[in-house]
Image (tube, rainbow, N blue to C red):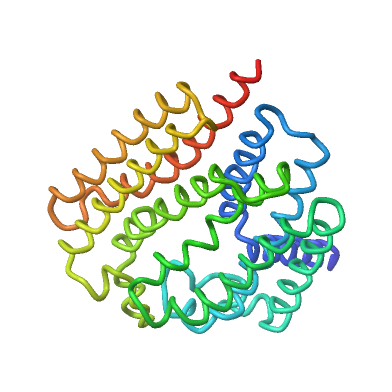
Length: 298
């Protein structure tokens, strides 16, 4: 009679450890990483290399997120959105999350350094360290520019994808970095508008907490314009073609529309639509990058 509860508890613990890695974030990062690889390859990348990059990147991202759970357990308990996370709720001990996160990052570094390249491994582990030590431990709790600067960590995966194929950092890799970097603020500030009270309760100085609603909306709109401009400038390189340009224009115009609507509407009306579209935007933009590269090769 006790077998069922034990199995249930075991399954629950496995799910909690999976939750520590924040799989949805990993998925988005992997889309940008494979986009960088396809672009660098001018078509389909070597499948073994692609799997190794995706595997190593998943481990590193999951490890960094697990360390984020460990470090943010105090503020996670204060926010409705995060109070049920494995460490904050007590289902996984802080020390277990810490060890789990360190091990994942170590394995990621070994996989990438041994089978891909030392540069790819260094960039990946550097992004994890930056996310954990600079963003989570410092910027997040001290400045409303936290997500602006901290976004550098999330902008590394497409660069790793490019470097894994080419072995070097080139101009297209810089554009890939810039696209994700400047996408992050409007994406995250839209979310922050929706959970402003949570951040205020936890004492986290996200922009909507320390600035007026109007200032936050203007910042979202301006960063959206900057992002779209960068995506169009990418076409001036020889790395992408007309399929990318057409897709980026359509996606960009819709993004500007959502940002403008948010700016014009009352209170936070339109913030959820802006946030959800931002997720679709970045995923589809990299789909267009890949489609463009494959079409050129064919």
